[in-house]
Length: 363
Image (cartoon, rainbow, N blue to C red; front, side, top):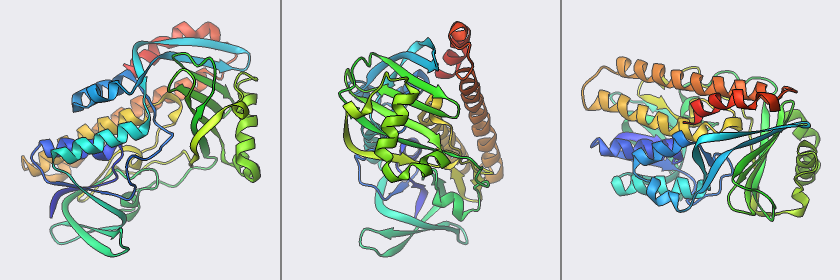
């Protein structure tokens, strides 16, 4: 039996496992994907995220693979504004980030089960996770605590009846890695129109993480030829600046959505939720990886209080709820302000006034 079983080996899951191993606890991870894996979201890392990676002790290895990002260039119709960062962020492929964090957790002692999590339930004095292994066999893993870091469609959250009702009008993201994109520079480029936006995150001088976010009904109407729709919509949003039909996609196109999810609570008896399994934050301002790593530190604090110091579970879990909600509110408020501000026709004149807000959340 483990002290802690973590569902999901993304940033929240692997960082939680690494930190818990450093507390002297035994940790297992359940992950169905084989790493390194391609994932087109979460490849912009703010300065605050970079600091979290330094605290984990993995930033030195990742820095050589990262591209510095100096700021954001926003476009809304004919208006545009350059918003420099006070401290540079990184553009880093998720394959590198996720694999590095998982390897660090494994080196600390975490055991990885390549399996699909199917059920979570409480036993008499333990939590039971039903997983289907690579041979298709159903196994039961036991732990004192389970951490749900298994993403937007969290099995842990569903098993504990934690997700809130899905809101209407959710958006979807289409993206991937594209080459042969000229003039990328060292800034994020974001083109905004209504509830849609198109973002380029430079991975090199000529390649970028490209992401198009649109309402679900618009994507549904164009489901017959999604690639043509993505090229047309990107050209329209960028007012002809970006031509994806002249670029070359590397690997497969990624579809993510719906981009709207939150849990009613982040805790249940014997269970903590972290990362996107707790709440998905609009990728517009790149807060997802930061919140995943920040939540991992809060997971460590809560579980160490329970298992190492004997704090009653309800007290440790209440503190976790309060601290994570406070940080999500802070980051979510900025995302909402940013989303509204860039849609205003006087975007450009307001750029300098908006920059301190950007610094406050990216620092």
